[in-house]
Image (cartoon, rainbow, N blue to C red; front, side, top):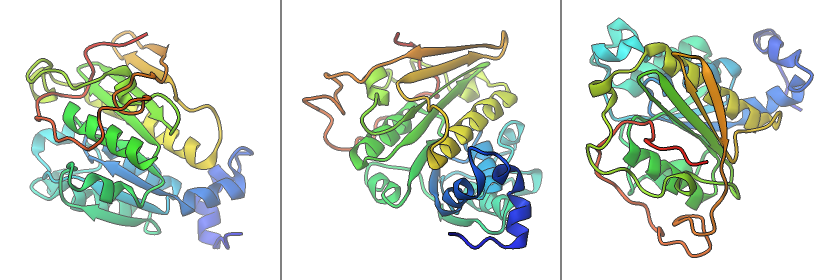
Amino acid sequence: MYDYTEEELNRYSRHILLKDVGVEGQEKILAAKVLVVGVGGLGAPVAMYLAAAGVGTIGIVDGDVVDLSNLQRQIIHTTPDVGKPKVQSAKETIAAINPHVKVNVYQDFLRANNALDIVKDYDFVVDGTDNFPVKFLINDACVMAGKPFSHGGILRFEGQTFTYVPGHACYRCMFKTPPPANAVPTCSQAGVLGAIAGMLGTIQAAETLKYITGIGDLLTDKLLTFNAKTMDFRKVNVHRRDNCPLCGKNPTVTELIDYEQSACDLATGKKD
């Protein structure tokens, strides 16, 4: 049994009061290791809520620096952080929220030659990236390593997410390959309502905490989509495909691939 200090009991009291979480559930959160890939629009609220919840170890992967245009949605960064590496800015914010959290920093982009080595030490992975090639890379690395992860994508006023757990449908079960280069506009080309990132990021954080504590029903084999203009939410049932090129019976994707960086993160089609 974890030996809580008085400060920790007070800090996490609202979790401990929940009968589905309690002392034991909070202990699982404190022992958990979560990797957040990308500390931009999605990764920002995810990392902040996981830190506030007391996730023991948070890894953050990002090779970019903070730009003024990021501040409209990437709330983990502030104006004085412009020009800083995003991982440094994020680490400082996490420490300010909860100094008990250990932060592992990877000031690099996730690539085929480093993905498996990075994800292997974590219990859960969060996709906070903004382009299809890395989303497929995260999916493939997690499936190959047997790691659960949360997928998220936003563009304009829309968002989508699902949770992968080994044995269930993966991203390639829904979308076999990335779209052709320049087939989908980037966020910088098409725009994105800043609050959408917070809406989806907090859903991803909730899925992460649900997985860690074992409470509730995860978004496995379901694609959750929403349109903030109408506030319509929809869950589409998906299935693990026997002919999936990655997790099917006869996989053709057997090694990680660095696809051309070409597009933003909302898939163009949804499969019923």
